[in-house]
Length: 290
Length: 154
Image (cartoon, rainbow over all chains, first blue to last red; front, side):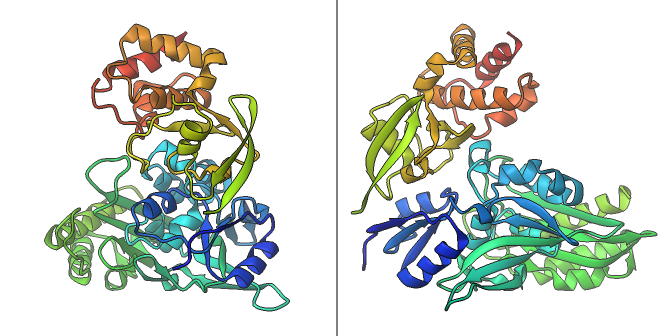
């Protein structure tokens, strides 16, 4: 085992990915809100180099690029919540931040960090999935900067595991600006509002026109090793009139398609019940308020 | 163990320290810089006793790497002694009896300072939300909320 014996704080993306390629054994530091307690508890071992990426301007900031909103990986949850572009186009993300940890943690925790931690219960992941987000990755395997992007659901492999290559950095999240008639809901279910890890979470989105829901996206958190698509539930809703019968059927499909485990936060049975009840409640709310 | 030298401003005073790379800002403030007003409660961001203000935003110093303070402005509870709003909050805590054992108080006052910066006249509910990251095991929070409310009205 090699101990942590090196610290770098690159000031450009180019420099960061070069160092990643060169140094190999690197632990990335962004907000640190997860890295610090995980390392203190022995759940994460520092690699040889700690790379503080917070001094890279390119990883900060929120902008509109064509039909997409680009949110830099180092954007904190607090910055995301108050940004005019997010509030105008992605109000779901602004309200998601409100359920995230506490004021102090929202001021430090980054969107990129929440994604790269790949917790099945990560608070921003389910909302980002139903918003159709993709991640932007950068590396420098040879002389040129190499960028690729990936739909967010494909990025997650398991708890704490992603498809990020060893010398690759997550640089931003891209979210398409939602179409007219777009509705989206996120519900995080836990025991208290602040500083809680959700027992389950649900996100639903779609385009509602004349009472009919289309382009439906459903995602669930904390019911599988990664945040997951509620694909069967999507099918139960797609193109259907959002009436009591559709809602009841979709809630049942949701309950049947998740296979959660029992752990300290909730039993598998309870999680399935909550998926049913909360899916129903969310859909009723969508139907009543549009 | 890799040491790193960092330069930052601590309560307005230019400060240079050498710290191990993995050291938390909390440990650096208490054990290297020697300011013990900032408290170690849980060490994992749940209790808020270690709240500091870094470049104008409040953070749990137990979750912050000391090296991240490099080049930045750090304010701890000691720094509020020269801040009019900080003094107002301190006075309100004393007058409302918002202190029992006192261990959460520095963190509460720092977070209250942050809240009043962003929202000078918060409602009681906004105050409760503002201190959601700070635990107090003595008071039941009522007098703490009273104190912050009273500080906001002065």
